[in-house]
Length: 185
Image (cartoon, rainbow, N blue to C red; front, side, top):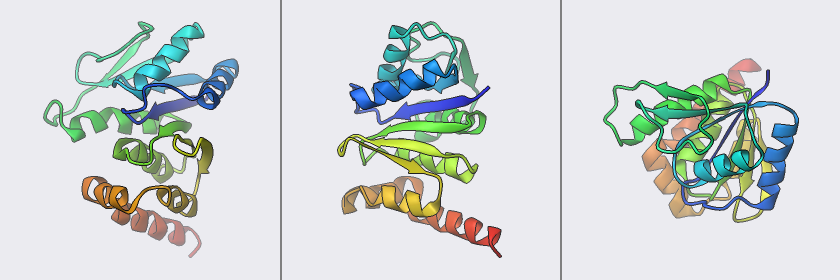
């Protein structure tokens, strides 16, 4: 069964109609959905899935209990030794979702390092993401380093700098480029 990791920026509280349409297509295709438990996009995604009467959904959380599980779906609690509430604590569940998913659908505000990191984690695993750039109201498919760099180009200089501080963005891109060039050596 195909599994889709759907996530997005915490400050996105409402899903664009184009995103809802993509989610509707995922549900109509009977794909399994994995989604996080955060406020913002995760909760909006859960709300839309619930409105569709969606059953094939698993909510992932770091620690014992999800912060949000609107549909009372099965929960996959990811154990982590990182301090509760830290970036690393919440990232643990995202890493597992990137591992179990076949591809991703991300809703991005051009600033969120968590959403950008999910795209990078999927790409590292040779999996594609379709990213809805909320500011531009467009979808971008990310399946290569060049496409990732195009996506990063949507960020302001300040947001790129912050992303580099938080998730070592530029080092991760260089690593992906090196990995990709080794494939053709």
